[in-house]
Length: 322
Image (tube, rainbow, N blue to C red; front, side):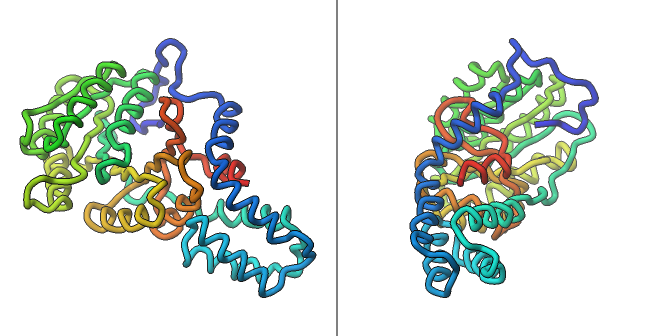
């Protein structure tokens, strides 16, 4: 959450940095990933039960295990190929877990493509995703984290087709101490986004977070509407939006992978926010998305609390998986 144009440290409000201690967070993450860990790590223990070496049958069963964890066929196949090359030196579940950890870390460490570091304020984040993935809540939590770190935040309620979204964002803005720009129902979303940048420049705002529609009630194509918002923002502030984050629901599994492809092709994503990781046994979707699209996972959601949305750390995540 470090903004490139800030040379001085911001003062967190009430001593709150917007994140919890690493120890307590790792404990919570481990607890919330228990379903995935039971599938993956527990499955590995069962596969090696009574076996001392890796053979073709075990590799086949291992590949099936990885696929059922939603790691994805292509990624699983690549991992199995790497394991088969090291088969002679792997003799048990602990060794294979350690090997998988190292391989997964490589897959999860992706730099953000095309993410701009703004030279001046505001830093603009456009948030996209289909309805029901937790987009509004994610924006609220992000706004809270930024204000807690001492930044001035403005939320743009550009999902004008869903009255509930605007109402929820207004509540989140009040709770976070953020400003909000909103228009009447069914107003032009691109106009809301444009006005939010104009307001941010006039009010010396540090961070602008733009909400967008996840489904339109008109014949307008959603992706075309998102492109229009992106153009509108860059017209007022060249190089913005600096980040385009796609919010995905981890419980939808491979459907989340398909959504990533559609949004990335249309507007060019810079990162992913994965919510509801605590409610799925298929947390391997994290690996599948990062591996398939070479996009960084910026935040993960493991519960309803504000502290349950955290910046993604590959090492912490992989350790919690095993």
